[in-house]
Length: 78
Image 1 (cartoon, one colour):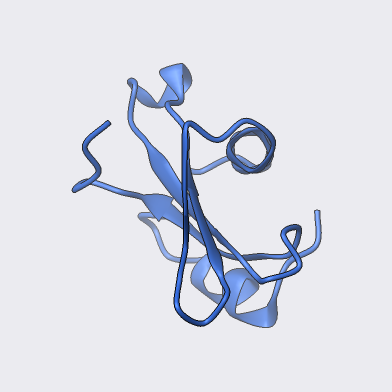
Image 2 (cartoon, rainbow, N blue to C red; image 1 turned 90 degrees about the vertical axis):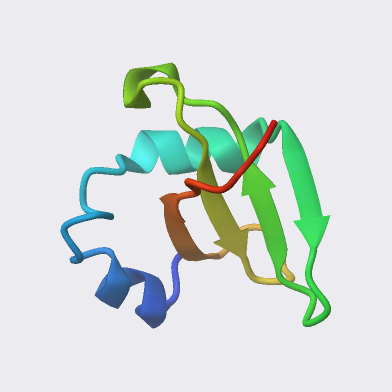
């Protein structure tokens, strides 16, 4: 999985270290929703049953494969 330095830094936060790489890769490959930001970055969401049915948001760089950020999106409404 390709990542940015920012992702590696924020990954150490207690609220984000619980998110497994396999869940991030699942969201990247099988998004239920996607939004392109004005800067070209891509937001993707998918329901993860092992996370109690929560939806992580994964932010990708415009290349569509480099993970810039990943967190549990508490405000996401499917």
